[in-house]
Structures are given as structure tokens and as C-alpha cells.
Length: 53
Image 1 (cartoon, rainbow, N blue to C red):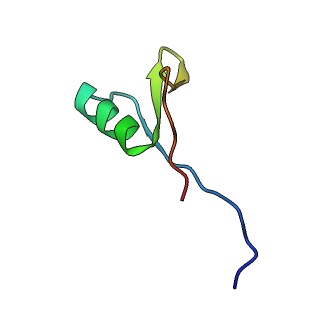
Image 2 (image 1 turned 135 degrees about the vertical axis):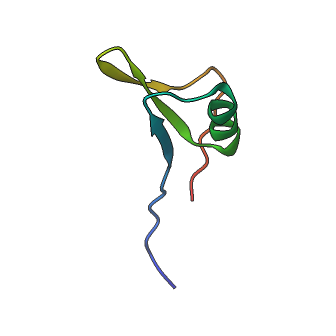
């Protein structure tokens, strides 16, 4: 039996992310990292619950 209790979270990242991909990623529990000008933003809408594995 493993004593490793770490949890892992995932993200989808891209320069251009379609609405469908964004919605699917969030519904599946992934964070969405998107380009915003010269920086990147992490999309965390209200009520978002990331899924750990």
C-alpha cells in the first residue's frame, strides 16, 4: 500500500482556444490557460471545481 497522498491537477493551454474546447475542459475538471495579449491567464470561473487524480 502506497503512502503517497499527492493529488494531481491538469490544465489545457493554448494561444487560441475555442469556446467548445474551453467548456469541455472546464466541465472535465481541467484548468484553462489562454493567451491574453503578451501574458497568459488561468480561467477559473465562479463555481469551478478542479478534479484531482
